[in-house]
Length: 104
Image (tube, rainbow, N blue to C red; front, side, top):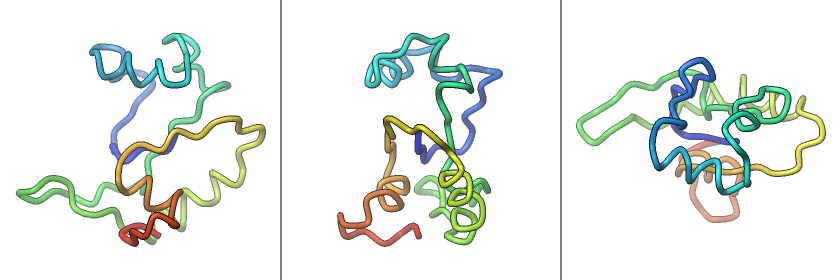
């Protein structure tokens, strides 16, 4: 899962507590136990470093963080069957043909 949100933690299960989390797990058709099983689902933030916030929300992700950390992790994943791309920065990274350039 490619996610823009910076603080997904398997220990606190943030997505299991509300309706948006249920919808997120429903997209790939996974129950909570499967969704939070690290042998089945990889939840990767986009930058691996929080860029800070401004009045309008989070600052843009720093491209060097994704290039340094994310790229090597994604290339190391084997047997990927589905990638959910969530958020603008994740879409920019995974779907560059859409014309956005905010993430590298």
